[in-house]
Image (cartoon, rainbow, N blue to C red; front, top):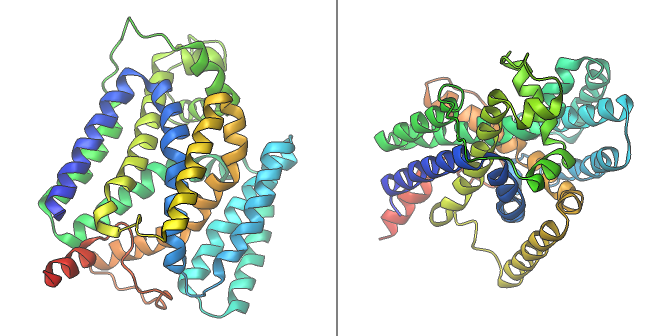
Length: 350
């Protein structure tokens, strides 16, 4: 698949995701999260592992595993402000630790950075803005929309592709459209299934937080339920979320021919497929149970991607002429957002 074909394919996937989000926002999100999400976690973690997570140390990623387990315990089994603060602190620690995995080489320097992150997180996690950014937005909307946008931008800059630039423009326009074009679909009513499960997995809290962050007018609605499921601003935010998650997953799967994430040992591929089918089955039986079973894997894939996110920032800066000196990762492989080197090798091989 050529770069131009890949760009055009992604533009088509953006438009399809956008239209589907307009029509069935809550239902599309639940479908994408339960069906596309688990397969994305499994295949991306496998792909990152083959590349040593783009870190400077072969075992750097070990720190993410216990932190992800602790976070899972806090989210699923603990309640209250203390649990929320500690959860936010753990995400912040992982995000800062990833800086060391990209910019530092010595394990002692990385350990000191982790300790500093723990202290800073402990001091700042009592503030609502800090908790909202790191505890709510970073592992959700920033991960699926902002970082995806950065990957697209880096690929467009590296490839110097007109269709690549067009794809980032379409991506931004699709995301912004939900807040400017607000169709009233008289035939659409949120199903009880969607209401119950969006609430059970606490994504109504995310919708509500974004509505208030953007200062959208919801004065006529008296509570969270009516704001999220009945108001036009609430549905606009949910459409944006559904689009961001759906395209985030589809964007990953569209890169199969470029980054070759599917090229794994046959036994591992069977494990991935069986695990994915089991996960979808659990979601089908009990959506909340599916979230609980898959929560560790979903958060782990977010954490493990942090070093790649930083390398994408660096790649964009370098493409714009800003040189940033960093140690080379263990595996000198192009990141997901920059498929150009892989494609060029394929062409030369021909």
